[in-house]
Image (cartoon, rainbow, N blue to C red; front, side, top):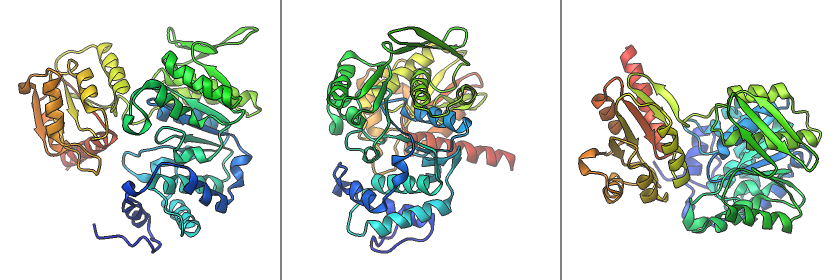
Length: 438
C-alpha cells in the first residue's frame, strides 16, 4: 500500500479506512485528553439527554452489549450500538436501530472528525469512536450502548459519561497494558464508573469485585453485583432472580443464544433502565433473548464435517471453550484450526486447550499484531502436545483446507484463537462454497 497523506481528507469509505490504517499506533499513548478536545468542539449534546450504557469486561462484553441494544430496539427505542472489532466490514462496528450504518453516513462522520481534529493527532480507535458518536447523533438515537475497546479507564469510549456501567467479567488479558494481576485489571475496567452512576457486574473473583467496589465507593456509584443483587438459573428455560432488601422477584425468559453468563448481566442493566423511566418492554427483552447471537461465538457454519467458529483468544475465553466442548457429545475426532495475535497470552491459552483436540492445524496471521506459526508450534510442544499432532501453515485458509481434507464426515473442526482467524476462515468457507456451486 502506498504512503497515505495524513493532511488530505479522503473521499470514499475505503480511502478513509486506508487513512486510518496508516496511523502509527506506536506514536499514540492511551489517554482521554485528545478525544475530549475534539468532543468539546463537536458539542454532541445528545449524549447528555439520552441513556448511555458502557460495557467493559475481559470476555462477554460484545454479546452483553448486543443483547442490551437489541432489547431496546425491540422496545421501539432506536439505539446506537458501537462494538469492535469487526469480522468482515467496518460498518459492523456502528449499528443503529439494528442495522449497520451506511458507507455514506460513515464518510460524513469521518469528514466531520477530520475537520475538528486538524491539530489533534487521534489514534485509530479514537477516530472511529468519534465517528460512531457522530453517526448516533445524526440519527437522533434514543439510547446508546458502547462496548469498551481496551480496559476502561483510558479507553476512548470512556470520554462519554455513562448512566450505567457494565463490567461483565475480569480475567488476565492485555497484561502488558492493564496490569499483571486480577485486581490491577479490575481497577482499569472500573475506570468506566462515573459519579453517581449505576454499575452492574457479572460473576467474578472476590479480588476483582473488591477493586470495583472501591471505585464505586469513591464515586458514590450504586453497585449491582451478580450473586449478590441478582442471579440466574438455566433449568427449564432461563429464570432471572433479583434480590432486594424487601423481596425477591423472578422473571422467566427463553434460553438465550448468547453465552449464558451474558444474559443475566444484560437484564439487570435493562431493568435499571426501566426503573429510570426508559420504556423497556418485556416483549422487547424476550425477542432480544430469542434472536441475539454474535458471529464467531461457537457458531456452526458447516456440516459433515461440523465446523464451528469461536473467537476465544485469552485464558478465560479458552477455559469457557474447553468447558463448552466437554459438555458436547463427540462422535469422532475434534481438531483445532488456530491463529493468534502476538500480544495475547498464547502459551497460557494453548496450555488450557491442549487436551481438547486430537490435532492442531496452526497458521501465521499476516497482520501487524499477527503471530507466526512457529511460536504456536513451540507453545504447543512446550505444553506437552506431541509434535505429530501439530501441522503448521503460512495462512489460515491453507490450515482450514487441510483440516477439511483430512476430516471424516463425523469429525468436528473448531476454528479459534482470534477475530482475524475466524474472519479468514469465513472468507475461505465462502470461497469454497461459491466454487462448489459453479
